[in-house]
Amino acid sequence: MAGRLTDRQLECLQLSATMTDKDIGRHLGISHHTVSLHVREAMRRLQVSSRKAALRRLASDPLYGSEAITPPFDPALHRVAPGDPVDDTDRMNGTTTAWLLPSPPRRILRPGLILIFAAVAALVTVGIVSVVSVAVGALAPYAPPTADLTQD
View 1: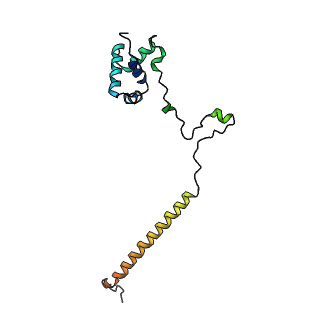
View 2: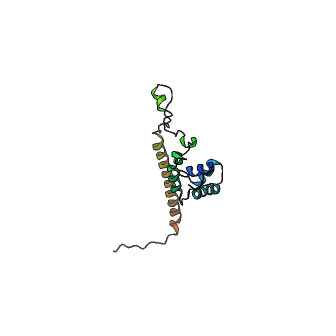
View 3: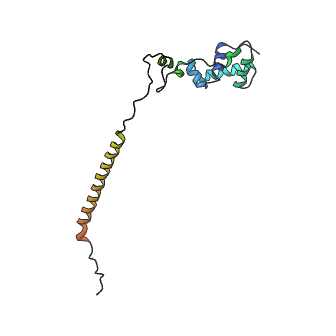
C-alpha cells in the first residue's frame, strides 16, 4: 500500500460501502463534496480505481482487518417501527410491553359513508330532473304545432 489512510478517509471509505456521499456527509456533518475528496484520496493512496476495489484492499490488509466494511451503528436506522413488538423477551417474561398495533377499523364507517353518498346523489339527480321538467314545461307553449299524422 502506498500510504496509510487518515482516520477520516478510512471512515468515509467504510461508510461508502452502505451509504451515498450525501448520507455520509449528513452522518459526519461535512459536505458531500468533502466526502468525495476523502474517498478519492483514499483510493489514490490504496492505488485502486474504484470504491469496491478499495474496500476489498482494506479487507485484505491486516492493518485494517475486517473493519473495512463494517457499517457503524446508527440509532436512527434501528428505531422500533409501528406494529413491531418493542421487545419479545419482555412479552415472554409477562411484563406489560404490548404490541404497537393500530386499533381495528370501524366496520360501520364505510357503509354509512356509502349511504350518505347515495342520498346526496339521489337528491342531486331529483333536483336536476325537476329543473329540466320545469324548463320543458315552461317552453311548451312556444313549441311549434305538431302535424296530425293520422290518415283518414
